[in-house]
Image 1 (tube, helix red, strand yellow):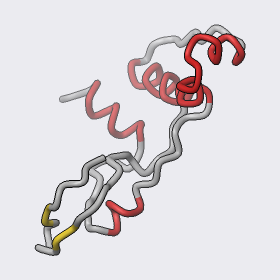
Image 2 (image 1 turned 180 degrees about the vertical axis):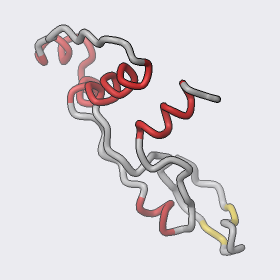
Image 3 (image 1 turned 120 degrees about the horizontal axis):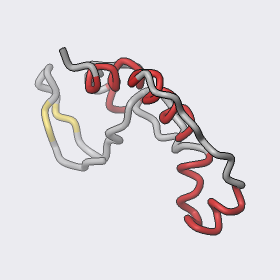
Length: 98
């Protein structure tokens, strides 16, 4: 998130806080499955009870268990264009950099 005053490509002044997040909502399980698929590796996610994750991480457990729902609408409306619109495409570009 940033609150700097900057100009977008059109030269329009944009101000206020903006969330620097991708448009696709992703939870931890989906993230790990996507990485395994791209790397062509098996994935073993042992079932860890939610109460145990909550006990260890407290409020931060929601990020692991549910993901974080942060909107990218404001930054998109300001003219920002994502190079990759999906997690798979972004990770594939990083891992399989040809």
